[in-house]
Amino acid sequence: MTEREAPFSAASPVPSPAPIRDDALPALFAPLHGRRGVVLAVSGGSDSVALLHLFARWRDASPVTVPPAIVATVDHGLRREAAAEAEAVAELARAHALPHATLVWEGDKPASDVQAAARTARYRLLAGFARDNGLDAVVTAHIRDDQAETLLMRLSHGSGLAGLAAIRPERPLGDGVVLLRPLLAVGRDMLRDALTAAGIAWTDDPSNVDTRFARPRLRALAGPLAEAGLTPLALATSARRLARADAAIEMAVDALETTAVARHPGGVTAIDLAAIATAPEEVVLRLIARAVGEIGGEPYGPRLERLERLHAELQSPPTGDGGRFRRTLGGAVVERRGERLWVHREAGRRGLPSLRLVPGGTLAWDGRFHATLSASAPSAVTIAALGAGAKGAVGRAAARWPAAALATVPAAFADGAVVAVPAFGVFADDAWRSAVRIDPAGR
Image 1 (cartoon, rainbow, N blue to C red):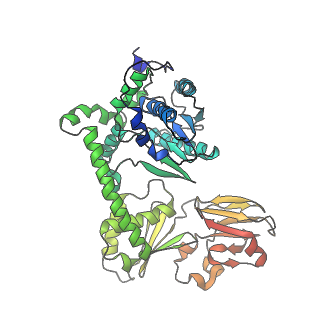
Image 2: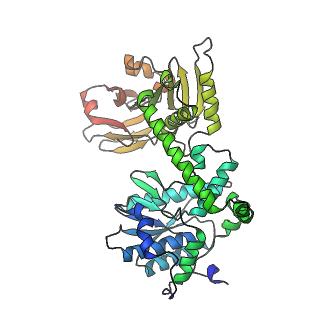
Image 3: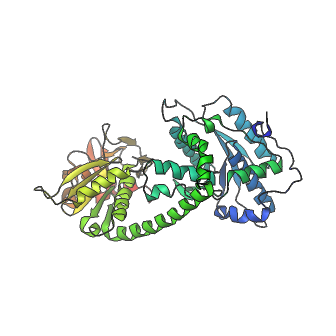
């Protein structure tokens, strides 16, 4: 068994020069400054073990206080060795004077696309752990090599500019927690050299070389690609420059949004077709994608080719029905009526949630709203979509709305009758007005 395949060692560093100098660490970990505290996601592979080691070195050498950190390892329950590897990470964390927790992905595992499901579960567990412990960031060890692989994968899928910008240094995980990736500019060889210099070993996940998966297949091509000039450094540089262009387009989307988009507190968005008529196609596609993503709730948003087809339909001359059409996209319904493009939640086969709320309680509805009922409320209520008869419940306030859009607005019901539709200021009486709140999430 070679050193790099051996179990972890918490041995004292050997006297050899560190490939990553201490004076480089403040710039490397600058994104962590000002955080209440961070979760260091450490699986046991070389990249994440290096993240732990370098963070501890930064903490020990820093003249200013660094944010408190907890090391967390996710046991996906997919390999028998996972529990032992998590304990090895815990030992290494203790050697670096850092607390450790193992987070277990429980429940049934999917029969297909298990890596994507595991990734989703991993971020859910890490973000939840951060929130539960009053921390506001999850830090992962994505590196330059990952960036290069991601760019190649997305090229193979025909991704647009946003996809080709690949892995971002930061993205929100929800409820005040962000994901930070401070090692994106660092190559794997440098990190492994740093660990070897410190006398620290790591383990390798067999799935990293399992060519049934896309990333290992790309890694197997790394040599020929590098000979052709497609080195990890070159690819990561391209991704960084594409990200810069992507940010410029996002600013244009922000500007267009201020004049073209109206968001209603009932969870429906209206886009002014005249306002977007002369905007560049890429900007319009992103504007629609934002609206669909906010309302539909699917994690990766609508597929680009479907957005392109929708945009082509918008450019077509109106037919005898005034150009009306209705499409489902990313968990949302996109409906053209007159000079507006309406975007609202797709009810789906199972319909929207119907949840009981007792006095003094609070709940999340459809992942998009927070509902609260005061302790002095006349009775418990059911929070559900308005559904059929919505126009009668709201009255003339929504005269221009498509009926299907209005039917998705959340309301409070008691004894089968609508007692509150806060988005439209509709309440059965003053008692319900003071008792029921249904706010878009984030407000």
